[in-house]
Amino acid sequence: MTSALFSVRLAHHILIGSVIAPLIVTICLQTKLWPPKIPVEAIFVLHTAIYWVWHLPFGYAFTLSGTWQYWLMQIALIVVSLLLWQALLARSTSVMATAGLALGTMVQMGFLGAILTFAPTPLFDAHFASTQAFGLSPLEDQQLAGVLMWTLGFAPYAIVVLWCARTRLLLPRLAKQ
Image 1 (cartoon, rainbow, N blue to C red):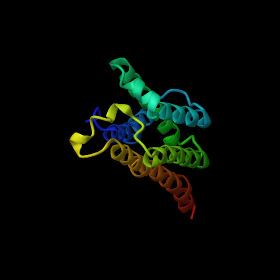
Image 2: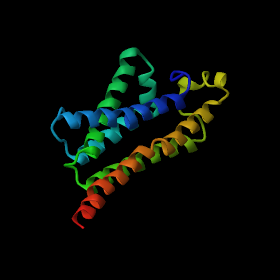
Image 3: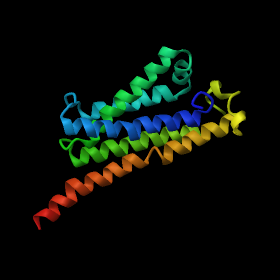
């Protein structure tokens, strides 16, 4: 279905980048198996660039042009998602940096989601003939992908900001009382 529907492919990317990546990072942080720390700003720029390149029409068309291109995209998305979640979940990242990184990620994903949702025409040629079998026009499929990016894509980042505030701000203050 990820070949036929852009919305299903986007849901797949949300699962990789916002569910599987934080689980892997949580395990690696507990076992101390993680690469050296990269500045939060660099991670944000790299994550944003990688996600945008692969979700714009030229990057998406390149992805679908062959097997190695597809796996290049998957690996790039996985690596930058792991780096992002490493910064978000590491205790060494300040509360402000965590909140800024999560909120910045939500904003850039929201902007990409808005482009997908409100584009007047379908942006991805690959799905012009594949969506009708699922009862969607190419534009409806693209709009669904944009809405998924806004809703499901936002949730993990909002949760990590709330979790960080609770565990790094609220609980230490309560423990002192």
